Length: 102
Image (cartoon, one colour):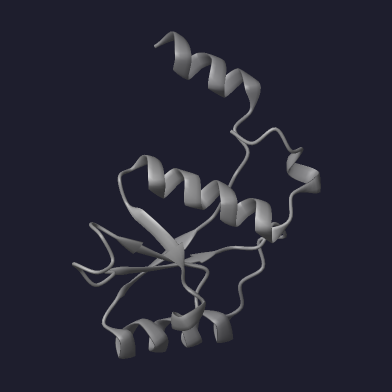
């Protein structure tokens, strides 16, 4: 969990949190700018495999209009990738505490 207050988080903070999440899941995470998204995920070394996923990180204000969805959908079809829309949310201290005691 990031130590930055959720109120003060920027899109860069959300991308960093998302990058860490997918790295911890075992993916190799790279910039997705050449594919029109924030991140791309590789299951192995990028020289050995193609990325299967484009990741769009929702901005801190939660805004995502239909044009963005339409653009991303068309983009992933043309690149042969699957779209992941990542929404970073804050977990309350009480919820985090409950998960650690289970």
